[in-house]
Amino acid sequence: MSAVVLAQQAESINSGLAAIGYGLGAIGPGIGVGLIWAAVINGTARQPEAQSKLMGIAWTTFVLTEVLALIGLVVFFIAG
Image 1 (cartoon, rainbow, N blue to C red):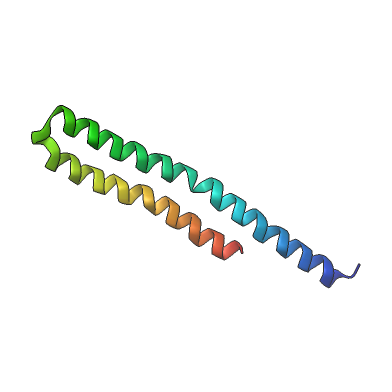
Image 2 (tube, rainbow, N blue to C red):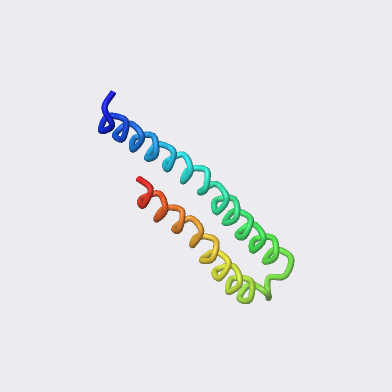
């Protein structure tokens, strides 16, 4: 096999691994977002008057968690 064919095969393997890596990397933020909103629902059920404070904290942590998923998406496109 020539060097060009080997390089093309390696590039397709790298893009496949990048897709698998992003898929696995998206699991963490998905679980994190679920835990954040579950805590807000639980806290609001226990103390309805604290809902406004809980929502502010929830949106802040939601954004921080989603940034991890966006960074993973950028790395996927760079690697692919």
